[in-house]
Amino acid sequence: MNATSADDPVRVALDSNGVLRVDLNRPEARNAMNRAVIDRLLDVADRAERDPSVRVILLRGEGAGFCAGHDLREHDESSPAEHLNRELRDRLNVRWSDVPVPTIVAMHGFALGSGLMLALACDLRIAAEGLEVSLPESRIGMFPALGGTTLLTRIIGPTRASLMVLTGARYDAATAAEWGLVTQVVPKDEVAATAEQLADVLAENAPLSMRFAKKVIRDAENLDLMTAHRQESMLNTIIRTSEDRREGIAAFREKRKPRFRGA
Image 1 (tube, rainbow, N blue to C red):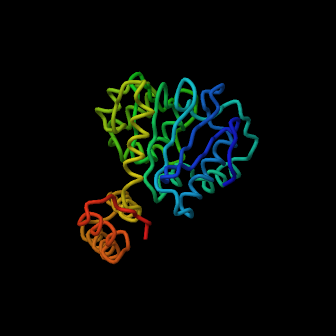
Image 2 (image 1 turned 120 degrees about the vertical axis):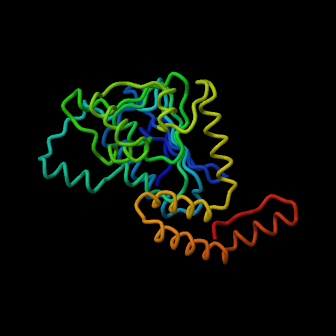
Image 3 (image 1 turned 180 degrees about the vertical axis):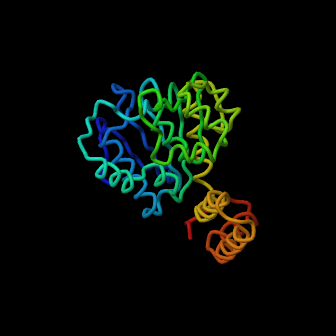
């Protein structure tokens, strides 16, 4: 991925500790997703899979809110078949859900439609007080696809997911937290710092351990107990022979911070 500039629709920067900062940067359009934004976010997912220096992804939105959803001003003249093929190729939310490193999203103001769906694909969701979330597609003759409905149902259950999707209503941060839609609610002026501190904490942990733990957690819903246990045992066997495990134990005995390499 090339370096980004201040006017890019998605700004991307890798900190020295391995935190990849990803900022939606269309505040004049409420960070609505157009083709350029989607392509950049897909690039981020690709980079996280192939670049071992990326340990954590921190996603944010510039301006008044996180993301207002898809940019409806972008006219789509493709045929239904072409549109379906593009969605299946892109699979933005599925791709972000499958990113091997931990993902954190900091949300303020609003997270609507496809913006909320993108947030659902992240592992940890930090919300500012005053945040409003909604999947309003049913109110404009659309449907929250792209994997968002499935992710929503897995996170908050079918009853509450049905209420959100069928009504298209907005819900506040307190309700989102009660339902498990967000991980934590903090004052608006603390949401950026809270997410950054969390990203820094994760960046200090063993990368291989976090990757394997994320995989087990993500797969748990789709595997029977015995298969899940076998997967845990297999991954634990790999961890036990890793350099990171040896370094972690050595650092503990020597009373120093470990220097993990992700191997």
